[in-house]
Length: 110
Image (cartoon, rainbow, N blue to C red; front, side, top):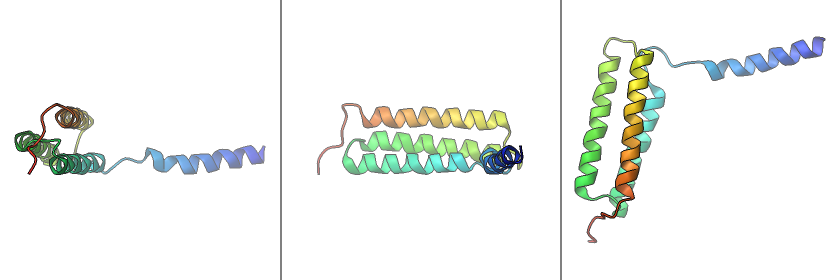
């Protein structure tokens, strides 16, 4: 009985950090996603998979996502609804990066 209790207590202590959330006014997960998306855009420009026009359009969408994030953070609390909206916006942007990088348009060779 004591072993079961000890095992359950150990599992609970290990599980608690997994459920920890970011402070109310921060979005670390979204910040990481934005950084990865920026790297994907830069890689696409470097490889020629993205034309200048495509890259500019994607960078503009990224700037809009950052502005939306800043508006959500303006009052010091990012609500669950705001988090969902920001993540959906990031999902659409990520899909757009994939589509643009894998279409038939490529940057001219220099």
